[in-house]
Image (cartoon, rainbow, N blue to C red; front, side, top):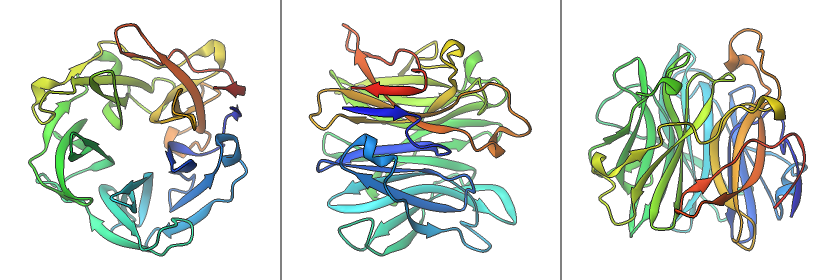
Length: 312
């Protein structure tokens, strides 16, 4: 299986999944004003697959600005998109929202707004990702509390857009590398392997300091008990100047079609220096590379690979 990195240029916060033998891709678009999806039978095919815009930002009010980090998920046979958006009149009033597809094909079915994911503590929130474990469905997301820190929270879901339990804090940016530029833990991505539930996340400002951290819990533990979660003291994936890959992060996970090789999906820039606000620099490109596992059952993400052909 071969493809070329970057897989899709100017697509940040990439979410890539394999469903019934087909790859589905969505990400933040440079204008932060729409949600698009594309599909292909191979990862390489995504590069030239047509992008279908399924939703556009409102003209004003909620969901009118900073449309960020969409994720496409199929839950109980239905398709949903989780995303964050703010208001044109208050551009940092970010909240989490859900779209639902009325048909079986996300590219042709009509999409409707299911509304905001309400959390007990109203505030800046984004990067919602659902996952299932032992017959229960959870939501992990980023929320600022107190206002200067972006933390990761976890709760059980009653349905795809409604929390069923009180959120629990599972990590806050308390390590030096998580506090460069901004105090950030965000972009959770779940991986279940080898008797553990792993959550990769991203930390620090969205420049060359951006990097990935890792949480884990035993698969038999109570995931809603903060004491079940452990955190790597060092980043597990970070800038590699020799490979010209800067600020890798906001990842997702998928596999090769046969399920034998795990794939890390992430964005990065191929240069360090950014003019102005990094959020206004569109050149965070989507990339994919294989990763392996250590003898102790933990993932080994290695280093970002240089741009060019990639094989799994």
